[in-house]
Image 1: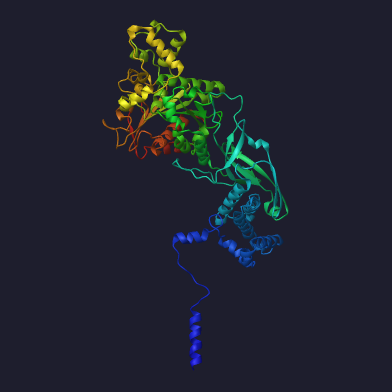
Image 2: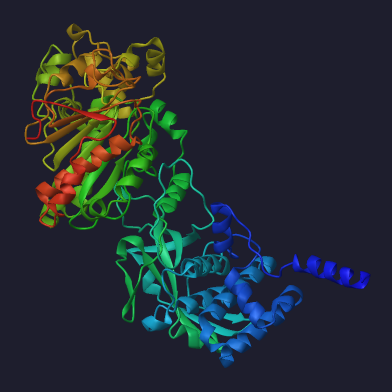
Length: 639
């Protein structure tokens, strides 16, 4: 009897150890379990586990991974489990990638990339390609990209090459013409996959297939110094390894393919047979690398104190983000005091994410020594633009060059205004009591003063946007520390020579040519005769003008300010539109409301000037009052 009871007890205990059970997971843990792969962990995916388990290779993989890979490859070649070839090829890609990470072996990484491409099979008939809804589809794209990144190194080797792989020989051909980018040779291809970006508000990527790179275009010897792309600028590029009949080739011992380089602005979509393969790009990371390598942030203050900073011909004053393309209208960004072109990074990054903006506009940045007299810096801006237009063939060669938009922040807005007014003698008379022609000056000095203080509208400029601009001066310029800084500024020799001639020209003038009074800081003081005279001159009616005015509070009022410029100083009634950006400080260029307003203004320009304009619905989407912004009626509102 006791034996029967004991036997029943054992059975009851054993029945409690069911071989199949379920466990409840949180949504996060459930997602991690379903999407686990060698991309993010040291473990392979559930489907690769199934492939190994079905072929009794799990234990072999743990002790002899190379043998497990060889067995799995042989089984795939012979058609073993022919109903599951896709899963086997994905497993080969994932396992080679996992083993490559363990051994840091470029050949294994390249093998993983080949298998990942074979799994995706973009040139295969539709029924033989994986569904884009399959979670392994995107994982295979990433395995392909990351494996190429490791295999080709940094900088990436993008030329023709031959590989000896564990599974055979691979020959890759590259077309040298792919290195040509608008007449420049691309060099130094840096993979962007290993970089993380900080300092930019938004990260934009273009999903697709390929390895995203950031390349440097070599400068040509004949390029003009006045206008060119920076020698540190990075171009977003995609490297695509194409293997014809990939599933057949990858299971053979001799493989061949092509390496295809395509810059982002040249790519629509590559066609592989009858199928479209979008290419993968990482434009934000490329721009961030450019900034980190090219911008010396300390130069913002050096350039403020040293008026001769840009006299060194190695330093560009007007630079392009990319070479000019016929039909694209220039947007010229002019920074403010003790600042630099790098401060426009977020705005440029966001605006270039808009396909219509990229199609119709290109961005130029102007840099200058911000302590110099404002009229002198405005001359440099005008001359740089004139020379750039001339070197690009002029408006006759490309009418888009006759539709320039100037966007100036703070002092940069004042420089921009000097190019869109017909001053006549009002600036001069507001500052000097004796007519220019009555002064005993050299012809060269007289011409420079006439150019600086009798400006007229530059005909190619059709739009101007003032951002945080002290139209009536800034109270900070009246502070003693500002005057102290003004005394530390060193002017260019040209400016010094003109000042000395003015002092000697007529004792009756009794002009105070002290550097601190002539420098830009005092020039922006509400007590400055220059700023008072400039404020009284309206933008020419043929130029469309817009104001973007940040305030730290809720809206415009007699006491509103951005911390540097009062609202009442930035407000002018003659602009076509004025947007007050609430709860924003002086450096508002990165504020999403400010950027959205610039986008709206540019889109309005597209609608008014381009025959290739987007649908009217797109215009309506951008012609809205933005959250955090308030439009103020102006005299020329919506001309």
